[in-house]
Length: 95
Image (cartoon, rainbow, N blue to C red; front, side, top):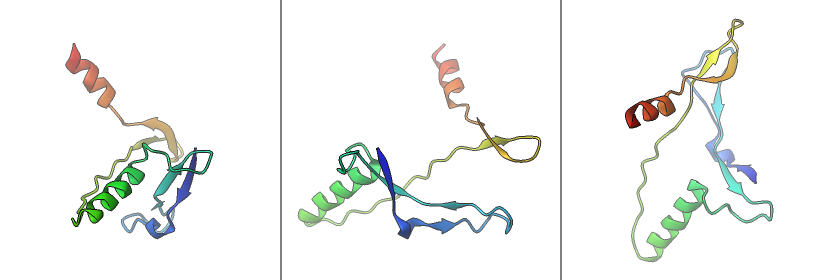
């Protein structure tokens, strides 16, 4: 699969310090043959917006941002170890 960035979504987060700025860029997902990946949420949304438009409706959306927070190492650099505990909570709840 391939990610195709939507340059209109590029934004530097204003709440980060001047040094070490953080930005986001949202991508569309495509398969190796160049067709959209059917399970890409952005693709699904675009299809539904078009369906609604064809039926004469206006489609309003409120996105939910998802993210992960990662631990920092002793040099204050990000690691690949997440603060994520949802898996742990789910297994405790199922016991």
